[in-house]
Length: 610
Image (cartoon, rainbow, N blue to C red; front, side, top):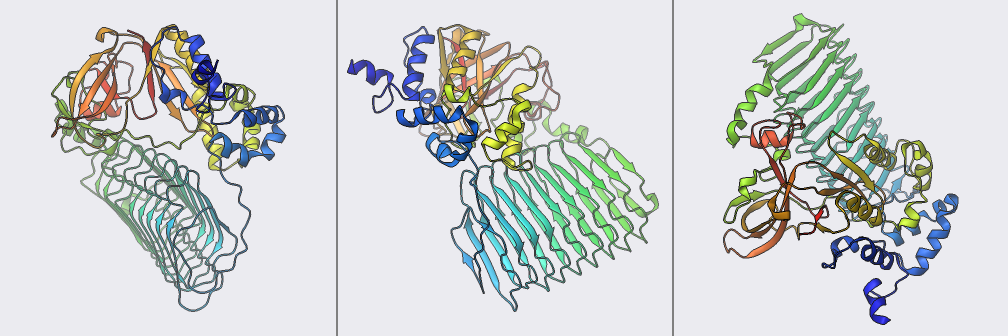
């Protein structure tokens, strides 16, 4: 009896835990006796038997569950935003925060007279869901403010600055290494530096290497007098990053705004400049290396420098993207008094509406940027292409999976927050549809405009999206759901695999012994990828015509085995879009080549057992 309990229970041998139940479920629904996939079974809920019973009762009454949310999230290993109440802490004089996180300052640094310096170092470092808020930050104060190493490596950092440096007589702000490598950052500045006199705001290395996410600046520098702003290496190397600038520099006097290396090397960055520099007096705007070497990208300039007095706007090396993006200029420079607008080495633009044509100079304007830059990738000879989202080794050809091949390996590390599955009994009682999103937001304490609400909405929309041609899909919000879906597609005699570890990431590797799954023939498989959600959620799908391989991964110098990788090769790419990163990296186009990629950490692929 004890042997059975130990086999079918968790580490304590208790069969009544969620993990014990999952192991029994695997034994019942998978027909072979091959070694169990502990990398999957260890994602079961960590709740003990008593907690499991308690929260199963609470979930029947969702109002009861939401009142115990923080303890539930902690016990069940979920990703939930902390509930922060306003902080009325007073900070006089110079304040230096060395290690800081999860605070909600209501009135920080207001009316501090004389010179001073506040700094934040190692702020919310590598936290899972950091939430911070500054209301009325530095108002009427000439103090300098510096944020160093803010939110590095965090998951879904949420940061709000309301009324930042309003009415300041001088004083500067500097954001250095702000939210680098963050996963889905949500950063907001409202009424930033409004009515300020002098002073300089610098954003250096802001949001670089981030994944998705958004930044918004509302009423930035409005009615300012001689307050300069610099955005340097802002949002570089990001994946689907969004920035919104509303009422930026509106009716300001003599302000200089510089965007240098902004959105460089990103994947489909999107920026929206609305009411930018409207009614200003002598504003100077410079965009240098803006969205350069990015993949696609969309920018919108609405009522840009409208009714301005004098001033100039310079676009240098703007929008040299690898695939054609969309740029829209509406009522640009209209009503201005002798504005000077220069476009030098400007990429593809689609629309100029209500544009004062006699004020603009176009030098080396390229209307077919994607064709010009595509020549760099012809016949896989695109060594000059250095776009992060087609990093070397992210996609490769099937012929590379041969013993002795030396090839680059991408970063396969899991960037998602660490979470566990909910027990199926609990997950099945929680709402899981866009029609019931309000109930979910209430349970997880998500405000309508919060990042948690957006995260939930995006995941549900993707789960409810119609499958692509030839695709069979399902979102698995419990491990049991994943087992059910995989066995429904492949039968009960299945094996699930993942790459063993992350060694070899971002370096060269040597391929060792290679084994084709199911004899290396075209086969069926089910691949499962993590989705950002409060609890562990996987998007699982089966696509036609693939081959799956296992390969030993060796150190190219010592020839020692460092990893055991799983790769999937898509034999039919005819339905892929022509702008897919695989074709940028490898050349060619849809249906002309097969495309292979590694299974990343914590993702997995299922196949019929050999």
